[in-house]
Length: 124
Image (cartoon, rainbow, N blue to C red; front, side, top):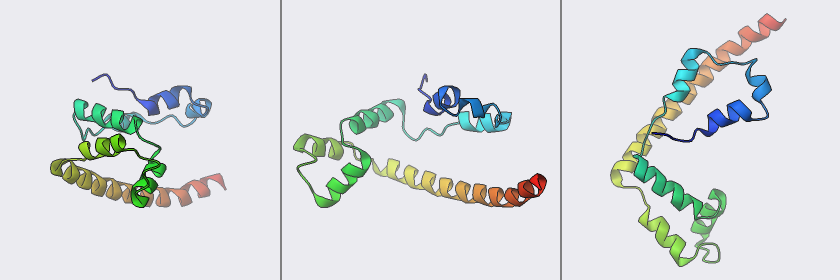
């Protein structure tokens, strides 16, 4: 696949690009970033991206759905949402991915918390 990598673009050309050289990731970290999990096949991913482009911003969309505000979402947008609902298999995959990401974030936080005192001691 020839996908667009926004993180890579930001890393190379973003405002923080000058600082990126100082905090250059290790090869293992770079490989981990490149190893992306693909939940949807390419066709489904494009369908979801097109759908999201035709809808208001996420926070506006969520508020409009909760309030059932038809001044924000018209009939065609509601139908687009309905037609694009995830399948039961996709929902299960999302739940499993979410659980895995939560575990990974907790582990990362534990590692970060144990490294902070070591880094503070080195700077003293």
